[in-house]
Amino acid sequence: MTKIDYGNLDNLPWQFVREGITRKVFGMGAEHINLTINKIENGNEKKPHSHEENEQIAFILEGECDYYVDGSPYRMTKGSWITIPAGVEHYIDVYDSPVPVLNMDIFYPLREEYNESYAKFIENYRK
Image: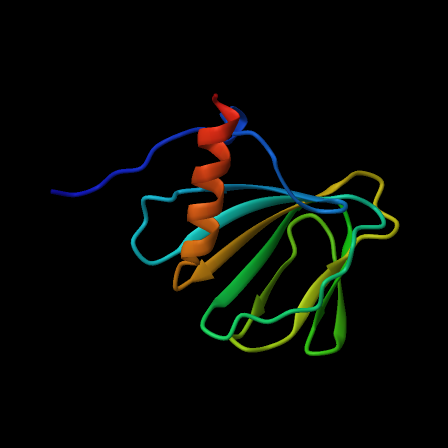
């Protein structure tokens, strides 16, 4: 039987990630990809990192930021997207956006730890 996951982002709570960053994980029923919506505030805590097994596409839905990939900054505004190959260091820097940055991240293959963390967060949130 085909598994269908359905919902509305407006009905999901924001999960604290670190100073200046919260997220919603959705589409958790997909077998091979993850999707997150992240809200990043001006002055967010930077955390250069890489995902050894995951490709990523970051898409800016709102706001302005510099997205660093492999040491190079890319100025991103609403509608901008960037691809991040697996194993390449990257991070987001929001420092002068008139509104919080909303970005959607797409990961392949899926990041199970995101699904597990958000599912546990939702379970505790509803108690």
